[in-house]
Length: 143
Image (cartoon, rainbow, N blue to C red; front, top):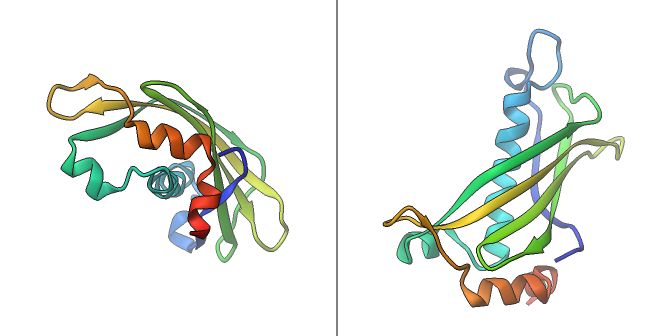
């Protein structure tokens, strides 16, 4: 999936803001995390499936670029896409946009490892998940 897919839509509330008046970094991470659940579900890794099959996804690296301030009342969207899929690893990105200005507020790039939740060791991503990512979850979302 190289085309970005909408994975989050929300609003910045006053309690998301810090003493400087803009959204605090902890909320960027939280909103990106919510988008992560949606992009993983598009690839076939729903919470229900992961619990049933003892699959965990563990973030091993995350890099965030802060581009523009977000203030209380700003409406945002996050679009997500996979950058690379390996046997046990997914690399993907999220981009947060201010809906009013259409400016990119932040981007994050993540590396996650598929984990067996019982043994706590890396395991292969399910084959159907790797296939969905290769054939673009954007198309699946329209099915």
